[in-house]
Image 1 (cartoon, rainbow, N blue to C red):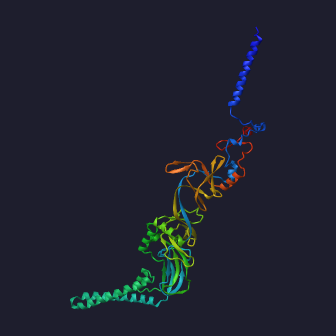
Image 2: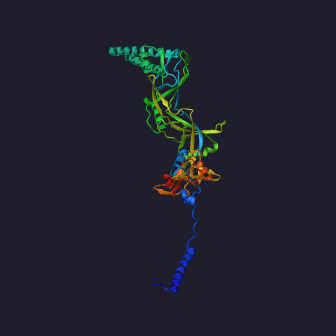
Length: 477
């Protein structure tokens, strides 16, 4: 049964009006939408760059990171000392390192038993000297005569005492006085011979009539007081005479050469205990005095490749500041103790000590002047400068973002960044750590890349919001 025509027409009009109203409402209330992407862009399956804000950012692929040798890590807040860098040199420690060996008497050098570079100890024989000293011969003769006269006087005294009361006691007293006088003379002769370098065995032989025509010149014995002083100079460590070695540095005589008493024959050097001598100008004196007053150690840069040597303490306190200024260089010196490192080397049946540090070696001294707490320390290569601005780059997978930071101090090797919120950080224990990893190298190259349009996403790749690069799905197949 068909509906009447008028009713059908009325229903169609109502439906059409409803559809029109819905369309109008959609146009009025829906927000504006960007126009659809061109068909060719959809076919390339390449998301628009606006999906990730790439301003002040640069995308660096895996291979590019390897080529730039990029390394990044979170930064930990540290304490940094502002320093001044002064020149220095390793020198002998005054009164300890050097030791002269002199001729004990007039004579001719008949043997040289050690040469420069040899390692010797106290008591080792250095030279053999043929005596030509009249005073030494007189001392030997005097000791022998005094010893012989003492023996005769003691025999005479025994006879007097054996005679009993029949012999006047005055004669016994007279002989006793004579023996005492002879003992005094013999003691003086022995002391003279000992000071001239004769050993106890030589002196005992002379007393028996075995006069010496040659003497051995030995490495001087180290006295107990000197050993204590050496121990104090090595931070309280005990120094034993048998472990203390010397190196022959200079030889001042030749075989057959006649020497006078007191003439220098060689120079011995104790390379174990040295010193570092620094040079400073007058306007830096207050900083050095502050370092001494606050007991701040001075950092020493030895500038040597010591990969095969044990770790060495590179900080030393200032022990002396000179009170005079050099009139030529207009500088004054200051000293710091240095304990050397050595190792024993066997060569041709002889043992020698090889030393790590040598006198005359140049060093750099960093004297502390100000303490900076709670700062981030990065290598100098981690900073890029652009006018008054300085930047670092934080890493998020393949995305490196440029961050403006405040560099409070900078030297040749390091840059010091203030923890002022420029780099997001969190507290862990007593330290603060940056949330992002900061590139430690190639900051200048990354800065140039941000200005040359290196933020383009590589063809066939897309970038996620976390900064990682991935191949498009059609590229992966």
